[in-house]
Image (tube, rainbow, N blue to C red; front, side, top):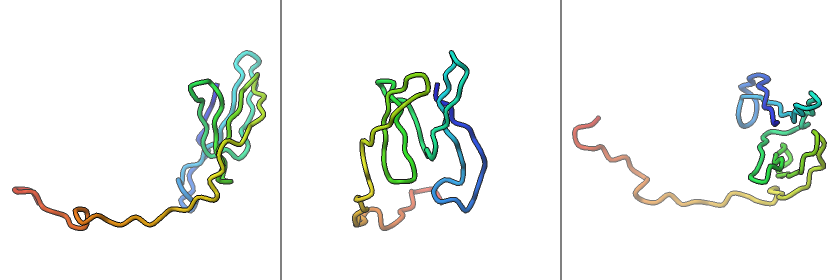
Length: 100
């Protein structure tokens, strides 16, 4: 089972001010393993653990009894946002008849 525990609120934190920790829980053996440094985690359609860290990478792992050996599947550090031009229709706000 994948657990997400709310640990607090930090308005100065980069990104979301909400802080979480992620754990794998083995309900059979009643153990929890923390996903150190994970900023997001979920299980994919093949029931693999997929998670991110603040290192700009995406990881995946097969889980066996809360034990896992993650593999790097994507490194987004080389990606930079490109310039996006605003279309003309989005440069003004048109009032609708009878409103505001």
